[in-house]
Image 1 (cartoon, rainbow, N blue to C red):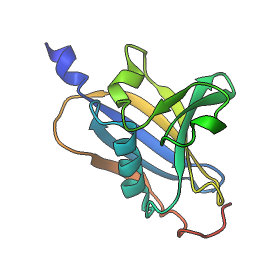
Image 2: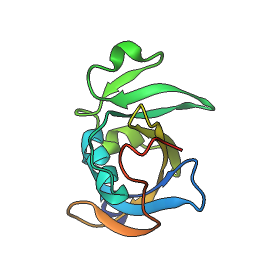
Image 3: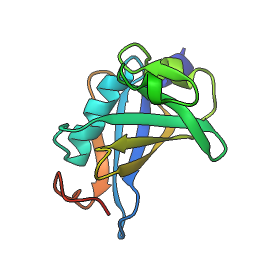
Image 4: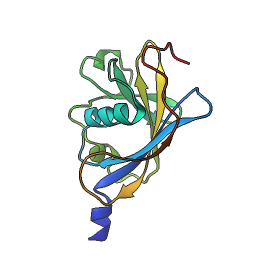
Length: 145
């Protein structure tokens, strides 16, 4: 029983590529949230304004051709496409062992690339919970790295 309760949330670390010292956050979220809700949580903890398109990329090795994103991107995807409004974090993680890494791409013009690490399961309830982090993100429409 304890194992099941430990799996109802997941601890996530997100960090922004291309900027040193590193900008990062750690938070936990329910495994039942959809990827669109995960995007909203990432926007909130990173301090973005959610004004631009985004997508999640994953795959095997260095070929991150599979996309989880908003309907409308599917025609631009080489690999598998999944609707972010339907796929939950728990469904994506399945029984795979963590840590699991994926990319979150925000603002396709400025090209803000974030690495998302699903670190471990955690017991708890409620919405996203910010746990830790360092440094502020650049302002929106800054021009990228």
